[in-house]
Image 1 (cartoon, rainbow, N blue to C red):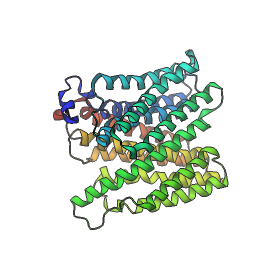
Image 2: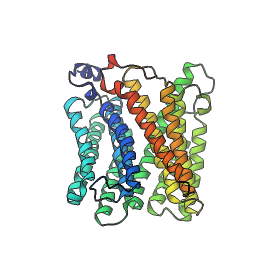
Image 3: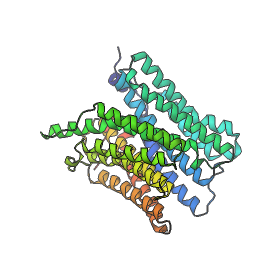
Image 4: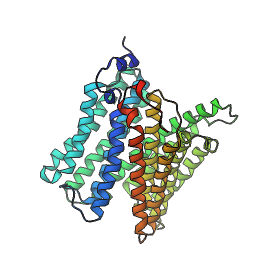
Length: 399
């Protein structure tokens, strides 16, 4: 029987089509930087795209469903074969999936010239294909423990469809049900999958250094945290500005801080590739506390949502992309000064955006946030381009 490694070695086409993370992580980085540059131009009064979405909704959609959609595709197409023992999607079928993602971006960009249904179908084609792929692999491999991931992927698809429906009705989808549901799914995915990879990677790194205190393994308490998380996110989606949501979000935030403290992140300062996972996950509880603050009138809701959007989703996805690319390219799991600078730039962007949301008069902070964001993802693309576009043996360690 052909193994995953043999199938990848037998591929003789472009190296970028040799594994799922390669095209999708590169597209995600390019889009994160490019879409932010276009967003800055839109804020300056330039009408760049003939899109049917208002500028704010385009910005929100293309980060949550566009950028994160590419990261999710790259992650699942790379991780699922490891979970199930199945063969990965490589070569021209992988190129076709990447083409579906590009099709969605193009359809939304020119959606003023398209019927809303055509735009929605073009944008939903990739997540639908991913759902079919994941369902097939779970059933074929009897890998039932990953059914929650499939359920969340289906919810993410529904959230995107709701966003398109709200846009077609002429409402403001940037503050609609679809966005909240999509964001809630993203936070739940980070809580679920991050709860596996952060302590696991940390344990491996600390064990190599003979540390005496290791992360606490997953237990019933973690299951309780995830249940509370789901309840708080459901309240956020249904009624974000209520006292019940504030109470549940506050409890969920504190429970995630407790969970994070058990993973020994304070011992990982010597390796940015590890501590960034803890920093990215930290924005999950901070986002819950910010939502609680917004629901009780202490913070603008838009500022609170950016803690999750830019912080949890942005930093955690960047951490996963940088680490997974190195690991699957066969390179040492180490982040040098340039990669560390990329992480710090994104943290600066998140903090600047949060402060700008609290004190709207500080326009300079918005420019700082956008510039740092572009620097972070632009830096990722420059550093990781040779890793994802060249054969494994020709890849070089980023500095």
